[in-house]
Image (cartoon, rainbow, N blue to C red; front, side):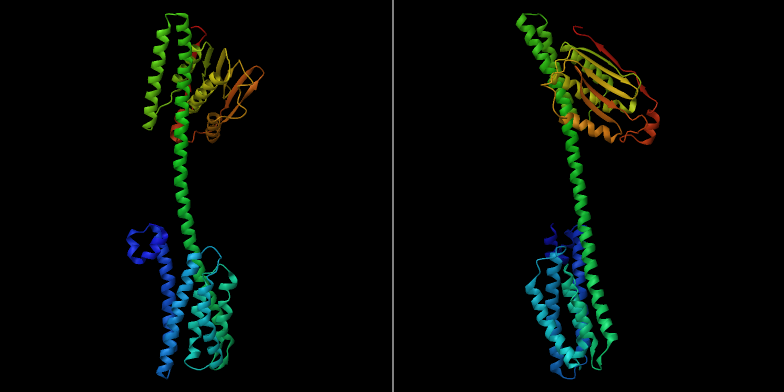
Length: 413
């Protein structure tokens, strides 16, 4: 239910409203109720001083008119808040048409029951104009209250004038503070919804990254294996059927991982990732070696992602013959030759950009670039940082765990 529907439904929509909508109903209802109550009390006090029935009826009617006009003006400012304009000029004019003549009567006559209407007019002006963000509008009720309260049957009394100004200022502050609290509640609710939207967007980004990692690598593998199978088939080599079966196995593996990914879980093992990467590179005729001995276990998952992305980029953007994956002094390095300047991307792709952000969140740093005839991807690990995804107990247990990881395949093996 929208806030507008909740406003229109009033108390009937209370049970169907959210907490924020209930807060809006309460604020609006309390301000309008207080205006009606104060004007009713002021009107009764003024009417009680009337000695003629005509004066009694006239004062009551004017109080009722002021109540309706003031309420309409207050509602207009509540609908407009927190914007300062455009001003509801028609409703302001209606309230002024009541306040100005009555104020003149009170100041000029200084006799009962009109002299008793000073408080009534003070409340009406402050409550009707108090919701405006234009201070010259809401502030006009302060001198107005001082004038109509200061003019008494005994003449001008400065004490009553100060009381009128203070009462008017207090009423304006009450309306302003109530609408301010309501605005803060709406902003907090909007922030909560934004946070929920960001969580959804973050989960979508994570899912798209995992899809990129899984499908990118497997499709690269399938492309290399299919090309090799086609070459062998053209030569009449008996190994072609075996290579085609490898393509099928890779496709099934990609399908299995995609299904696991769709179910929300897909464990990432560094040793398996290195073995798969080296096998993939070897099938492309590349001498590949990997040695990550001594790597802190906390960094196994992020390093596995870097290896996956790095190997995929080697196949896509280079004509490499040699790839080395090493670890030394808290630096993981993926180095390959066969750099083709025309294939090297000018900036981070989506994979490297995502990995860079993830590693920075964990306290590590990723750099990459051409160094002579080689291309190097480095992950500078923070040896004293804790993986944010791991609690303190797990970190204490795994901080001393080191991974003995080796993989070695040479061209033609």
